[in-house]
Structures are given as structure tokens and as C-alpha cells.
Image (cartoon, rainbow, N blue to C red; front, side, top):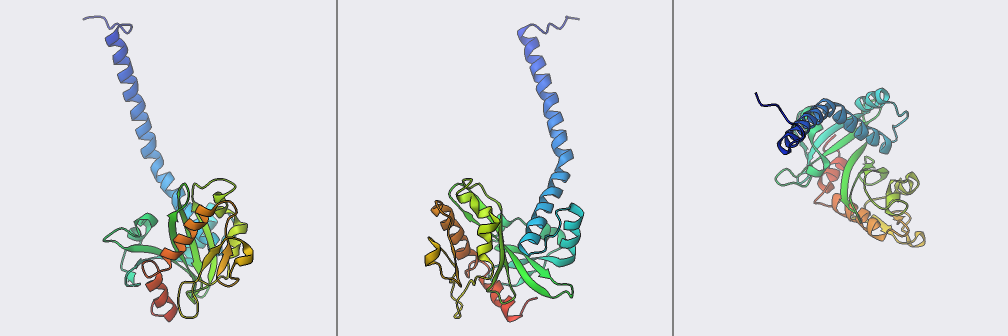
Length: 245
């Protein structure tokens, strides 16, 4: 039997191939083993942000978050064209991603009903996303049962410039949105992000981000789309009328 010469070209290639194969197996095995943990952490982060925007985030503890979410939050799928609920299993709803919302033929979105101790819907959390300067900005907006008053907003995934557009994740900037109105008395979209607080409509507007015009425009575009008839408009109309609960 010929002796294996690891110092030869063929020997070196063989060692490299074997080493690469072993490393790929190790990496693949680790990825598979960690996937369930990663999925769990991803779901927990979504729950954390929903509770935050709904004003129910009291303690940043995994078990507390899960218990609070399961007690007060009911996720549902909505048909964006009709505004009606889509009949779907809990598993189907949990697998639905925000980025799938405007895909054809799906045209569906996941919404989160927030209930009080008596089981009555006190607000609804709506996911939204849109392009900023550098990234797609993913967030949640909580709306009161009047389908008009903003109760909270949060951005949980964005890659805007730190200290400028990245300030959309700053709780102080987000606090401006609380109790602002989305529509006027005639039902027309009215919410607007202004450049300069002095120009802002106190009822329907907030001050934009200083030095981050394109990011502010992206936030405005998100509101313009998701609260139009192409977005959650039909759902909010039925929600306000009490046709869906």
C-alpha cells in the first residue's frame, strides 16, 4: 500500500478537502441545533415589542413576557382588501412574516388584538414597514378602538444612521406619537411628520428627525401606505364600526 504523503500537492489538497468537510458538518450541525433557539428568541423579541407598544411591558423577563403576551394579546390574520379576518390556525398565523403582507396573492397582514382583564379589545397593534435612507424599517403602531388615535409606536428592526435616522428607535421621539390622530373628521388621512415643531399640527402631526429628512420621509411613507385603503384602511373601518372584534 502506498504511503500517504501529506506534504505532496495531492496530500495537501486531500487534507484541505477533509478539513473543509469536517468544518462544514460541524457548522451545519450547530445551525440545525441552534435554529429552534433562534426562532424562540425571535418570537420573544416580537412579543416584547408588541407589549412595549401596547404599554404592557412591565418586566423584561422571558417567562413574564410570554405569560403577559398569552394573556392579553390575540394575533389574527386580516385580508387587507376586505378588512375581514382570515380563517387560519395558530401555527399559520405565527409563521406569517410582516414582509409577506403585500405579496400577491396573499395581500394579508397579521394584527394583534390587545385585550383587557375582562377580555374586551382595548387597542389593536398593527405592523408596518417602509424604506428609510439605508434600510427597511420595521415597526408596530398601536391604535385605540376609535381606529384613529395612536396609543404607541416602536421600531424594532432598522439600519438607519446612528444619532440621525436611527433616532426613530428613541423612546423620546416615539413618545410624540401618543394620542395623535390618524384621520380628520371626514376620515381623510391627516397624520403628518413636519420639519420643525413650530409647523406641526398639534393634533395630527409630530416633529421630524433633525438631519434625517429621508428617514422621516420613509416613516411618513409608511403611515401613508399602511393607513390607506391599500393597507389597514378597510380593517380599521370595520374595527371602528364594531363589525369585527
